[in-house]
Amino acid sequence: MDVKVFELLGKRVEDQVKSHSEALVGGAVKDYAEYRELCGVIRGLQTAQREIADLVRKLKDDNDD
Image (cartoon, rainbow, N blue to C red; front, top):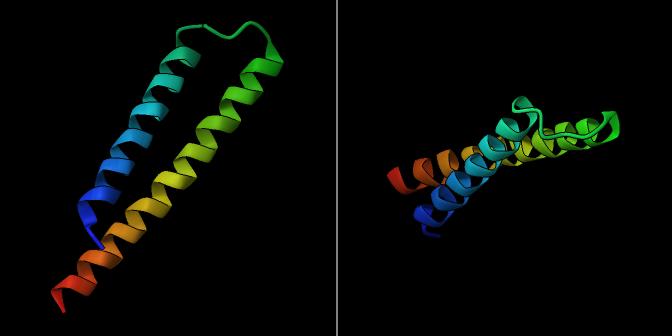
């Protein structure tokens, strides 16, 4: 499988994390409920980001063998 696809996906997820984090830091949330939701979204995206990075490492290691 092409590693570049997963690297691109990881970059897109990273961009979303940055966008949501900037909204959070910039005070774009209206209330505590929205703050909690946005924190949950960021946490989920970061989990996905780690999973994608692990997959990319595994695929690169498999290609080196």
